[in-house]
Image (cartoon, rainbow, N blue to C red; front, top):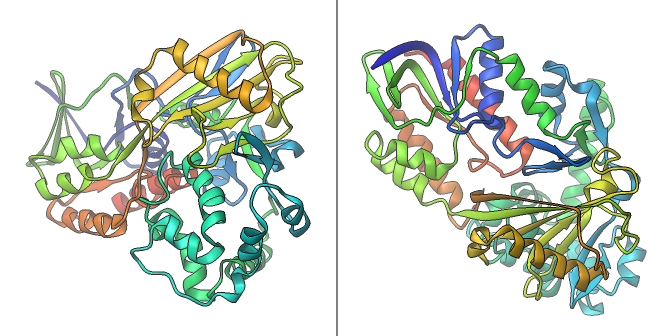
Amino acid sequence: MTKAHHDVIVIGGGITGLTCAFQLKASGVDVIVLEAQSSLGGNVQSQSSGGFLYEYGPHTFPASADVIFSLADQVGVADQLMQTSQAGRSRFISRGKRVHKVPTSLWSLVTSGLISWRAKLALITEPLRRSKSSPNDTVHTFFSRRIGEEAATVLAGAFVSGVYAGDARQLSARSAFPLLWNFEQRAGSLFLGAYRHFRKLKRERVASNRPARSGLFSFKGGLGRLTAALASALKGQLLSNRRVDLLERSSAGWLVSSGDTGYSAKQIVLAIPPDCAAKLLVDVLPSTSEGLGAIPMAPIALVHLGYHNHQPALPDGFGLLVAPHEATHSLGILFPSRLFSDRAPENGELISAFVGGVGNPGAVELPDSVLAARVKSDLLDLFGISSDPEIIDVIRYKSAIPQLTDGHDLRIDAIQKGLADAPGLHLAGNYLKGVGLKDAVNSGLLASKACMEFVG
């Protein structure tokens, strides 16, 4: 077996691994990235077909994601940033087979038919409740206490289904919504905590002369523009089609085997999903492997439908989430061509739906034609769209979104402590401290910092 030695080996060429490797290379570290797939970027890739531009996973990132704006500047794509159109400020929730606009003001809440008057009153009087959260609160328990049972079920439930593809009654409030959980801890109220938080952010932004941003962002050419730029900057340090078969300790620190090729390094970064990391560590760190394997992953199928004709029945907005217990196949439906001008041909329409999740794990195994038919059925029921799309593309992930269930923070603490028995081994990924794109990027930054600080 041939061997090549490096300072750091990053296993996983998704956004987290690429960010980590890019920072290490910029600091003069001899680093390589081993990626099992033929393409790089993981679920942060963009694809063009027939004049349509669609994403492999996330579609946008928030204005608060300073780490992504900084990274974009470092790799030279900051000039390609795009903000969503004004329509992107509108969001919708399906309840009772009716499409409701999500209220964004007191008046729109009063006039909305999304929740009952009793639920509206419970939501408005949230600041008057002074109860404190428990570390064992589920998302549903937490929001039921703060904003009432109905609003928690409809609003928080729809958000959890669309973002986590999970169940609000299973996810940990402290892990899945740490910012909101801390609002209650520190201010005794979500609304008051949010008010104080954003005032503080504004003061910090003004003091540091950072630009004021709002809304959601992507890049010309899609989010894949960022991972492509990272890959280009790492040219020569990236090896695709390199599935790692074995990870073991060696005299140099660590030995990685991929087929008939071996790689040795002082440090290893596992920037891969927790179930994949668990398999590599089963003999190296059995207890850590067990902890990683205990993190549930939601399967997702992302169904893209491209229409050459404008669909006037589709409302202007970011997309639609589905309240729990609705007779709808889709967890959420996005309207990318209403957000960015380059997502569909002129007068065309791109609609992207997420299907599956913890409540319907078998959906990811269904044929493309069946998944497309189910999404089309949802579009007909919800919006009255009956025309057939010209483009159908389905992307499947059997292990897509980590489920931060009860005790997740304790599991992660135990996993991190277990790494003390394996000097030079680091973990990175969106299962550690949040599932968003900015969390994935930040995890890569933290892993690169840990590598730079390692002494061994």
